[in-house]
Amino acid sequence: MGSDSGFIKRNWVLILCMLSLGFEVKGQSHTHIHESFHMGSPFAITVIHEDKDKAWEGIKAAEREIERIEALISSWKESSQTSAINRAAGKEAVEVDAELFQLISRAQKVSQLSSGAFDISYASMDRIWKFDGSMTELPSDEAISNSVARINYKNILLNKEKQTVFLKVKGMKIGFGAIGKGYAANRAKKILQEMGIESGMVNAGGDLIAWGKEENGQAWKIAVADPSKEKQVLAWLEVDNKAVVTSGDYERYVILDGKRYAHIIDPRSGWPVQGLKSVSIICPDAEIADALATTVFVLGKEKGLELVEKLRGIECIIITDENEIVTSSHLNLSHE
Ligand code: AMP
Ligand code: MG
Image 1 (cartoon, rainbow, N blue to C red):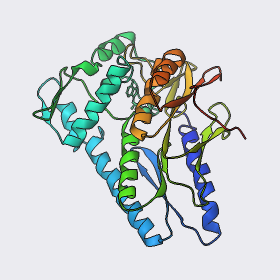
Image 2: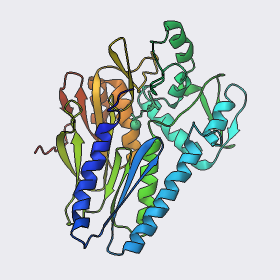
Image 3: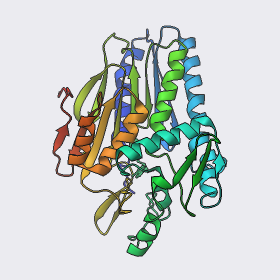
């Protein structure tokens, strides 16, 4: 596993915190930042409000919401409904909360849209690819073909009336690594808005959503990191009620026989996807941005861009292994 794993995303957190901390230093700050760790990633909640108590009340409520979501969707927690679905694979349907049922339904729509490039049953490969430093050699072709056979979103059977989920094939698993943080960011934003917080930002492990304005009254400025140059900003995005979510090959990966294998799996082959360094999606919804960043990463430059151009209100920045930067047609980037 790379020692710089996730550094770009952390870097975003740092840059954004630095921007905001600038106000704190002046002593009159209305910018309140809380950093924590969820879903295996650093989170940061930023709230702009003149009443400090109200700001922190909001931050705490948002934090509780993120914890609640993690307990529901985590496939690592034995007690979660997701784990119950996975345990019952090939055996029986499991009744779940409407919230989880709907999240799975939305994930299925992204699978349909991408002809299976995005597939939450990628998790059926779990035992084959490990990005925790424990892998020392490439898996055998046989091991890969045996487990890739279990990946297929069409075998996630949803029963709307009974609100049940059934994984048809024994050994099949689902996981929300590619969509869960975006969903959590959306929900945290919603909670804060309901509590009267008109400006803020939720950074869920680099999956960002910002609304309102910065304390200085200007639009939020989000740094898009350059994956090929350590700690450098590729461009700044000025966002107005938007999410900016990046999928990258630098986040979690393993190097075997001198080659880098990153954590995004092509569900058709069972092999980690090659070809791109990062994909950033910019759109109003963090969950959609999260799911699409992963999807475009799997689809690759041409097909990924083709998909984004078909979708209204969604923009992207794709950086290839050769450091080519491709953006969707309506994106305005400012370089500094
Ligand atoms: P992200 O950083 O949002 O692109 O999510 C990457 C994570 O999504 C990985 O660490 C896996 O947990 C999961 N994942 C990997 N490949 C896929 C895929 N093809 N479809 C859906 N989820 C995936
Ligand atoms: Mg994603």
